Image (cartoon, rainbow, N blue to C red; front, side, top):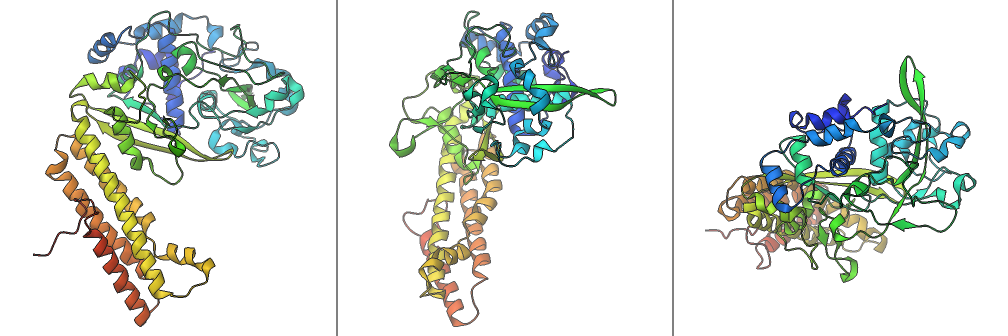
Length: 502
C-alpha cells in the first residue's frame, strides 16, 4: 500500500498539488522537517532537481512544477512504497521480523516525545500503552526517528542481529539546528531548499533496509559508517532499524507494535551536505561547528548567527556555495528562515525548539545589524540585572551563609523575565527591518527603549520580595541606583543607554 501522507494527502498528491498547500501541518516542528526532507529526497531521486545555480534561480522564479517528481513516484513499483511489505517494508528493517511477536512494544515507542529514556531498564510506560497508531502517523513518526532519534540503549537484544544492534546513535539532525527556507507554498519551499545537482549526483534513494542496496550495515562486528552518495541518499537515510506491525482494528489497518534499534551511521559530513548549517565558533576556540539547540537559550537569541551566516560573515572557513548563496540572488524576494532543533538531556527529549526569521536578500546587512544590536542590548541588560541583583542581595543580607549566596542571588535576579519579555519586542524589531524600515531610523531606538523599560519593571517585581524596613528599602534603592548607573555607562549599547535628563 502507499503510506498515507501528511494530513490525509498521499505523497503523490502532495507533490502534484504542492502549490495548493501553504505548508505541512505536523504535530511537532521536527516532524515537519522530517517529512519535508523525505519529499526532497523524492525530488532528487526523480531527477527533477535543477542542474545549476542559474537553473535553480529560474526554477524558483518561475515556480517550476513538481509534476515530474509526482509522476516518477507514481510510476515506481507499488511494492517499493508498501509500508507493510513482508520483505521490503518502506523505511524499515525487515530483519527484525522474527523478534516482533515476542518483543514488540507499544507504538508509542516510535514517538520521540513519548518514548522517554531509550534504556531498556527505565521508563517502560510505552510497553503498556495499548493504543494503536494510524499508519500515516506511524510513517511520519518513523521519518522523525530517522532524522532526530536520540542516542542510547535500544530495547533490542544483542543475540538478534549482533551486539551493535542495541547501541543507537544520535540522528543526523539530532545535534544541530536545521534551517529551512520557507516559501509561499509547499512547492515553493521544496524548490528553495533543493540544491542544484546533475543527474549522476543525486544519489540512491533508501526504500528499506532490505531493498537490495549493497553495503548496508551489519551489527556483528565493529561500527561501520558511510558517506551518503548524494542528496537523495542523505535525505532518506535510515538512521534507525525500525519495524512496524500492522493489525486490523475495527476494520482499519493500524500499527499496534513496534521494534526499534540501531540504524545506519554517517561519516562526518562534507560541506556539500551541510547546505543550511549555521556555523559558529567551535567550543574552546576550535574549528567552526553547526549551531546546536540549547535548553538555556531561546532560538531567537541565536538569530544574529543565522543572519551572519546568510550574510556570509560567519566563522571561517565558510562552507562555500550553499543555501544562503542561492538565496542571495533573489534580491527583493522575502523568505522566512525557519530554524528547528531538538533539545535533549542524555537520552531523553526535553523540547522541540523552533523560530522563524524574515530574510530579504537585499536587506541582509540591515537585518544582521538589527540582530547584532538587539542581541547586544539584551545581553547587556541581563548583565545589568545581575549586577543589580548582587547589590540587592549584599545590602539585604550582608552576611549570608556561603551556601545561600547563590539562592539569594536568584531571588533578585530577573534575567528569566527579561528574556521572556524581550522575545516579542525582538520579533517586532526584525519584522520591521525586514519590511524595509532602516534599522537605525526607529526600530532599534524603539527596541532599546522597550528593553530599558522592561529591565526596570522586571527588577522592580523581583525587589518586591525584599524584607520590610530600612534594610529592605536601602537594598531596593541601591539596586535601582546600580541599574540606572549601568544603563548610563559608556559601555552600555547606545540604543539601550538611559538618555540624559534635560
